[in-house]
Image 1 (tube, rainbow, N blue to C red):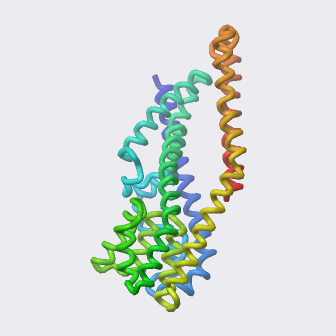
Image 2 (cartoon, rainbow, N blue to C red):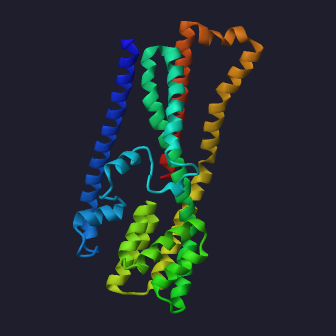
Image 3 (cartoon, rainbow, N blue to C red):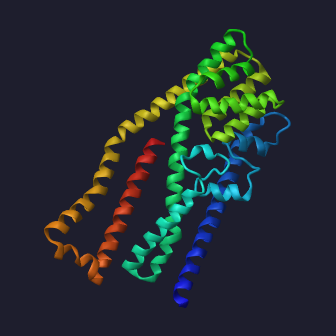
Length: 318
C-alpha cells in the first residue's frame, strides 16, 4: 500500500523539480539576453522606459506576467488567448493527464512500479507538444499575412490617411487573424493608448519578432522622422524574404522529415506483420521478462532517434 503512494509522491516531486529547473533556466537566459541587448536598446527606446524594460521589449519578454501565466508558459499555454486553441484550453492538460496515465501503465508493465515516473513526464511532454503545435500554426499564419497588411498600410498612408486610420483599414480588410490583432490595436488607440504602447502590446501578445520589428520601425520613425512608407516597404520586403527562406529550408529538409516518418512507422508495420505471420514469436516480447527489456530498449532507441533527427532538422532550419 505504501509503495504505490511512495511512487506517486516521487512522480509529483519530479514534476516540481522539472518546473523549478525550467524556471531557473528561463531566468538565467533572460538575464543573459538583457545584458547583451542593453547597449543596443539604450539609444533607441523612449526615455520613460528603463534599460531593462527596453531590452526585454526587444526580446519580446513580458515582465508583468503572473505566476500562473509563467507556469502555463512552461508547457506553452496562453490562458489569456483562448482563441488560439480549437478546444477550451483546460481540456488539453486534462486529456494529457489521462494519456500520461496510460503511458505510465505501459512503462509499469515493462519495468515495474518505477515506471510511474513516466506519468508526469508524459503529461508535461504531451501537453507542451500539442499546445506549442497550435501556437506555432497561429504564428506562422500571422507571419504569412503580415507583409500584405504592411502593404495595405503603405497604400493608405500614401493616400494621405494617418497611420492610426490605416490600422483601422487593416482591421477591416485583412484576413481573420491579422484583422483581429489590428482591431485590438485600433480600439486601444481610440480609447487613448499611444501608438507606441499599442504596438508593443500587440508584439507581446503575438510573441513574434516580426511584430517587434514593426514596433521598432514605427517608434523610431515617430521619434526621428523620415519616410514612413519607405520604411514599411523595406520591412515588408524583409519579412517576405524571411518567409521565403524559411519555406526553402523546409523544402530542403523534406527528405529528412520523410525519413523520420518512415523509420517511425516501419517498426510498427513489421511488428504487425509478425503478429499475423508468427504470433508465438512476437508474443515473447510481452510474456518473457527478457523480451520486455528488449521491447523497452527498442522503444527508447526509437524515441531517441526521433528526438535526434528532430533536433538536427530544427537546427538546420534555424
